[in-house]
Structures are given as structure tokens and as C-alpha cells.
Amino acid sequence: MTNRYTASLPSVGLTSFLRAPVVEDFSKIDADVAFLGIPYDGGNGWRPGTRFGPREIRNLSVRYGAWGGHSANGYWDIKDRTRYLEGIRMVDCGDVDVAFYDWERNSNLITSSVEAILDRGALPVMVGGDHSVSFPNVKAFERFGPIDIVQFDAHMDWRDEIAGVREANPMPMRRIKELPFVRNMIQIGIRDVRTTADQVRDAEEAGAIIITRDEVRDEGVAGILKRFPELGNVFVSIDIDGLDPSIAPGTGSPTPDGLLYHEVRGILKGVAKAGNVVGFDLVEVNPMVDEGGRTCLLSSVMILEFLGAIFANRKA
Image (cartoon, rainbow, N blue to C red):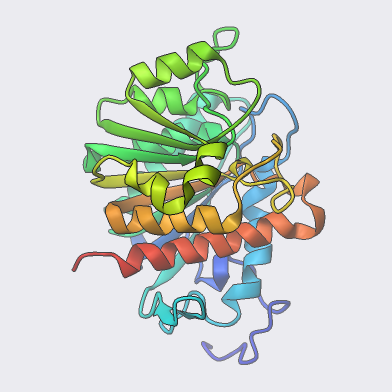
């Protein structure tokens, strides 16, 4: 029945990331890329709703999957006059089975799910969910250590604890940097007025490189990439609030004067060229405050274009 939907309009058929085939049994993954939704927002201290991020990004992604974003034909980029993702196979592995309240259970299940994807040799693309899910995501990549982290965000996410809680939305990058197999950490787009001097001091003493939004504007993409250390295996964490809320309003923690899409795309392409991207996540998309689905649509294109850059730079 492979030809059942011959027109394949975006409004037809079941929804999956970029209309990729659904394979929820990890042992049966036979693909280059595996999408995994993580519908969790229990670590969010303000506006809830990111638990619905994976579902709505799927819904908007079919706008692009309908013309072959997941097919062996890939897509043609008019900017580069190049075809990307040709022959790259993608599957959608559904969602992590998040349960109520129990962070330890959910965290372990997130890590084991990503590990199962890695066991099958696929590149995991995790879509959250709030930013707390990035810590269990990265824990799954120990086999690739030492690993470098590139983060796009308005916030450093470097709090140590809040009332004894150490693994919530404000803390994942600090917890990640504490992992023994994590080497470099580069935090890009930082601008939140609540950023404190002690957070910056602690992060820089731990070896993190902090690049503010103003520095990206002043130095440009090429200048920022020159500041990177030598990259090896890389995990990228994209918090959607790193982008400007005028183009990505659907987030629980919008912060004025954010990164523009072409800036993020340019840096992502540079990261894919400089290092070996072994996985990435995209978090903090909140469909409940997303005007017209703009953030989910942008997220879909970002995933697609970043995958294009990753596989264009993969060494044989």
C-alpha cells in the first residue's frame, strides 16, 4: 500500500515528523535519523504547555514532508543550489511514555530510549518538552565521549538548585557540564536580564564559553565560529527562546531581542562542518501560546535544514 496517498497533501494521512514512517519498536529501527518526542513540562516554573510541543511540531512539519523531506530524494536548497538529505532514511519513533510526577522514572526512560536509538546506529533528534529533558538526553551519549555541547538559548540554565530541586528547567546545562564525558560547552544567544554575575563566573570557571546575543550581532556568524574551540563529537541543544519572539513567539519564556533565523542557521551549518554532530534536541516550544503555529513551522524547517547540514558534512 505504499502508493495509497499518491497526492500526499499535508492535510491527508497520519501525522509524523516530516511524514517519516512510524517505527515505535526501537529494535526495528533501520534508518539514518530517528525522531523522538519528549512531551514533558514538569520542570517548567512558569507557563506550562511544552508537553504539547512534539505533537504540534509534527502537525506543522507535514507542510514540508509532503514534498519529500523524508524521502530518498531529499530536498533542494535554492540558497545553496544543492540537494540535501538525498538517500537519507528517517523514521518517527513516537514519544517517550512520560508519566505523572516521577522525574526519576521519566528521566531514566528518556535516557534509555535515546540509547536504544543509538544502538541501532541512527542519529537521534529529540523534540521536547521543556529544557530539563536535555540532561537525560545528553546522558545517553556517554559512548561518544569526550563530547562537546553547543547550546542556543536566551538563558544560561545554570542554576544549581531551587528549594533542593537540581534537575529542572533552570539547571540542565550546569548538570550537563558536570558529566565526566562532557568537554567543551558553548552557550550562544544569552541575554536574559535575570542572568547573574555568579552564574557567569561559575560557568566560565567550569570552562563554558558564553556568547551573548549582542556579540552575535556585532561579530557576525563567521566571527562567532572563529571563537569556537576545536570540536569533536558534538551534541547541540536548541532552546527555541534563543530566537527572537517576533519569529518564535510560541515559548514559555520569551525574551526580547533574540537571535534571527539566518544567524542560528549559519552557526548550525558551521557547527556541522567543524565537528561531528552525534545528536541534537529542540526544546521549549509551547503551542498554547504559538500564534498561528509560527514557532512550530520554524522549528520544522530548522530541524530539516540542520539535518541537511549534518549529513552534508558526514565523513564516509
